[in-house]
Length: 223
Image 1 (tube, rainbow, N blue to C red):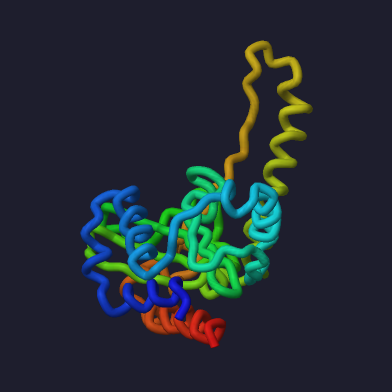
Image 2 (tube, helix red, strand yellow):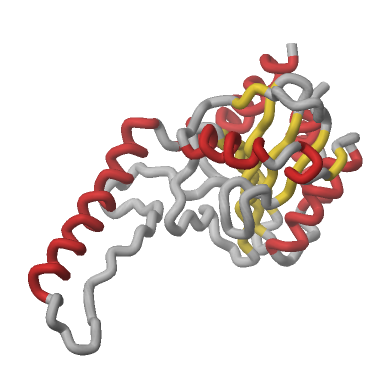
């Protein structure tokens, strides 16, 4: 069985041991420790091959569903492969495939992850934990945001960035102290426009379906 499947199966059956972390860093260390407990060794692009870094990054940025493992590394992981605050938090090298694992952690009683400027990725496997609620769940990015909606959301900011630049060129080109508009990406989940939207990841009618979908996906790849 792949290490990544072992990890999610263990979260599903033994959630309490993943909920002792009171900070995002502690939670990240907890996941890394569990990966190692399941036989996954830490490595780096220096060991795997520095040329793979840009290669994998380009595939991931294009949201390819799955990455075939063309390296000699199996049962290894790289944490923060592309730097802090960059997706994903872990690259996990299985026997045949490489998986993108992203962690979402809140210390408060929040019921939804913080996305900031990054939407859920089609190729992402997500773990969301709340220390305040003592709960943890997981899901695939493609199961909570379809490509069509993702492209619409991204397109909005593409237009806003262009509009901001045109505005600055037209109205701020002679602003003595350089003041200008700045369009910043930020995504959130809310019920304002859809009263039926699922924004509580711990208490909703699709939670079990989302978790089962991820486990089934990994099980099918493992066959």
